[in-house]
Image 1 (spheres, rainbow, N blue to C red):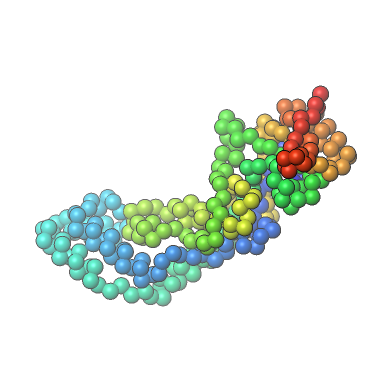
Image 2 (cartoon, rainbow, N blue to C red):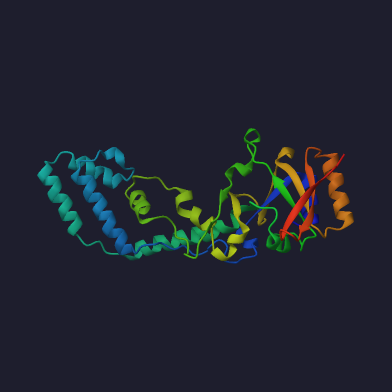
Length: 285
């Protein structure tokens, strides 16, 4: 991050989670919902699932769908032959895609579009020595890297962090199997299974970032970001870029010496022999 951002973080001891609308990549979190199957495929698999439930005499308790529950209760009174005949008849029926199906998907799309401004994401990286990251996010080596600790006893928001998946395949909302189970009432709606891939999938060209994300949701804020208060022990180290100004370096050292004395400070050196960035501990006391 930049020196000015680091000062704010350390003075207030907080981290900012932002809406994807503020990200530098407009395609970072997809605004368009995609499914990996057609509605016709969905209808076919749903019929097959219902036929199986009928044929094996499933308990009505397997579903939260009132209509299917009533069907299974009725099927419990039938003979095996009658159940098999009913299941076979169901699989042969043609289920048409109608306007209500498409309208439901359009409503789902509108819901997701409304959620994006309220979604909050904190982006972190696994590494502190990536030259491209220093150039892009730390003001071309004039900024810093803050190292964070994920501490259970403080119930840190960092406990929610998950690795980003890099792929050139466009993310979709859930699998066909999941949608069949959910539609038939056998599984509840699961936010992670539906929207998780949208928030944690990026194009492979960004893979150098080695990013992890904390994803949250803010209902009340009118801004496109939310600042989360962190326990002081969350901040463990600070790494100074090779070109940070003396004023910024002194200010930040004074901050950690005064209020965050547990933090360790490191300065950057260029290892031309190994062709890499290296860091040396700075004595702060």
